[in-house]
Image (tube, rainbow, N blue to C red; front, side, top):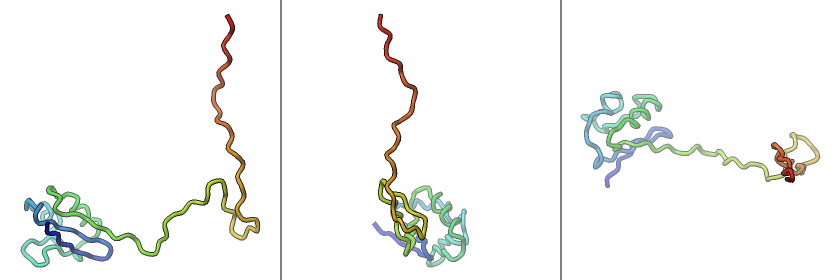
Length: 115
């Protein structure tokens, strides 16, 4: 199936003409971007990212979709190892072991009364 991509910065609008039912919802919603009589017919420079995303999400045939690039140079979050706490910066001690967790607290059930 044919897919055409239109990109601006970290936003890419994907159009699949084989799915398009030509309802006109896109160009009625955002005519500054979706211009079916011009080439390229999707002009992402003419509106804010949020408006484009909202319009694409309203496509009744899902012929339009969004593909966003992941942010560059941001390392994935890695929690500290289980059982260690991070010392304050400049602390000479390094990671300390945490005490074992306390047993769960709840309502204690008394033993049954003998008959």
